[in-house]
Length: 74
Image (tube, rainbow, N blue to C red):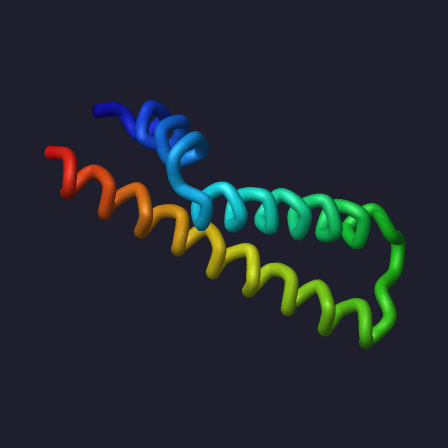
């Protein structure tokens, strides 16, 4: 099964996947807004790093859910 098919199934059947994907999307928008600024304060730089780390954690968890689904339905 293709990864895109698994993602669509998880979106419809898995609450955790939907929640994580939505949070990841929100963080992506926040990060885009920060990147648009010409200069960031020290606090904004720290916040930017926190957002990047959290986005990566969400992405890793989504990948884990995809792998788990793939193993369970192989």
